[in-house]
Amino acid sequence: MAGFRKSQPWFLARSKLQLAYAISEYEKRLLPFLKQWRRQAKSRFGDKSSCCDNFLNEIIPYYIEVLVQDGIYFTRDFPQHPMSHYLNVSTVH
Image (tube, rainbow, N blue to C red; front, side, top):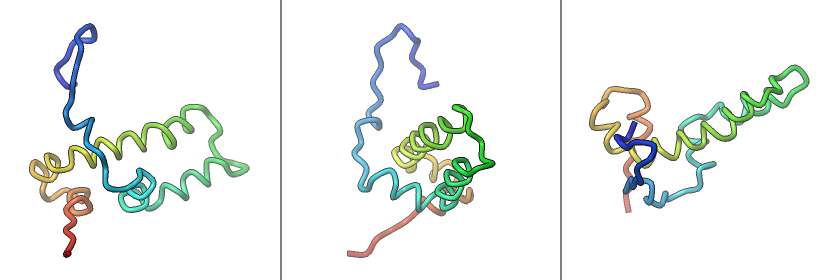
């Protein structure tokens, strides 16, 4: 999706961007129910599939990392999206 062929070497500058907080902090801020979903998956009647585990513990954290790294573009292109409101945070020093 980044425009590179599988056989080509690639470089995405944003992938080198160091985040200000740990991914778990962004998980709490952007997906407040994620902890509950993980708990439900581990419960007696929860989904024990590797698909569920991969989604909750691998894909979502990676998605959050990319979302935060590319957030400036997301908020520019989709200013009214609810996720843009979460990402558009300012701090006063």
